[in-house]
Structure formats: C-alpha cells, structure tokens
Image 1 (cartoon, rainbow, N blue to C red):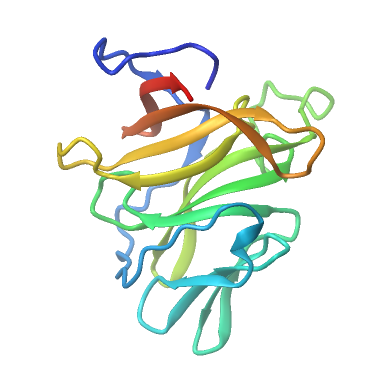
Image 2: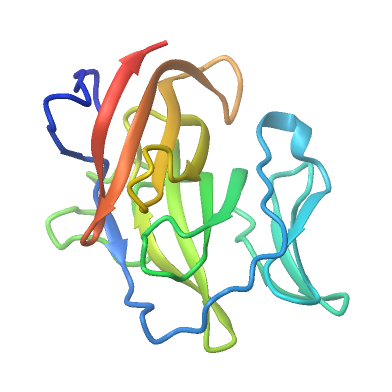
Length: 206
C-alpha cells in the first residue's frame, strides 16, 4: 500500500501487499453465528463464535484465543499483538475466514524468500494482515502479509457494492511512533481478493 490514489471509476487494481498463501479449498467451512469487530484498546475480553461451542476472543494484551468446551484449541503466538479481527469470507470462496490485523516483529515467519538475508530483513514491529480458516479440525493460515508500509488502523469486510463479492474496507495511514501498536488514519481504501492477493479498488483521503 502506498500514497497513490486510485478512483473507483478508473478500474485500476493495485495489489495490497506480498503474502504467503496456503490452499484451504479442502478444508471444512466455518458456521458463523455472530459477526464481531474489535478495535483499539476497547477489545478486552470481547468474543464471538466460530462454530457451535467455539469462542474467539482477544484479551487486553493482544492475545487471541479460540476455545471449545472451555479448552483452548488455538492461540496466537506470544510475539503477536492482535489489534482487530473479523470473521467473514474475505476470499470469496464460500469459506468463512478469521481475518486479523497483527503487530509483530519481522516481515516474514520461519520461511522467507531466498533473496532476503538475515541481515537485510526488517525486524522492527510492524502491522500485518493475516487470513486464517478452520480446516480439518485445525486453524490454518490462508494468506499472510509481510510488513505493511501503510498500517491498517481499522477494517471491515462485506459486500459494499452489491456485486455478490465481499470487499475488504480499510482505514490506513501512518505508523504512530509515539504509541505502540497504533497508527494514524489517513485514507479509506477498498480492496478485493483476486487469485492469491488483495487488489485495490479505490483509495481516498479521509
């Protein structure tokens, strides 16, 4: 994401960010009972359900957990700060996803492109966008971005233009270096999943 502006009328598409994709088409779909969005520090102990008897919540320390029958079946790594999450079909394949904005150190996970050396990797704490799903009894990644040059302050997912496909709508901007895990919103952007990445549909100043 960068500072370029793209109007909806010119039909210009821009890829959101580089990411790693995992094929989830053989996975089981999620049964959504409640949609829920959290943002900022107000998310402490907020929760929603993925499947019957499954609860998703984020505590005041940015830790996301999924529990079933009071047992934790998945939790975000300790080094992540989950800032916001939405349960929705962001990839338009009929399978509901756990979509998260995450603050973490480093642009990549254990695997990174061969041309990125240990010395050249940016290891500062930056904002990322991750898409996960529930497949074969496990929470698995569908797609994960590298560091975002323009962090996502808030986001929502829904069919905003009536075309039958969901869009990712973000408030994005600049890193607020005075406060950890925060950004300053500058733009409202609309993104749509195409093949294995998000592409920009429109981007306007707030």
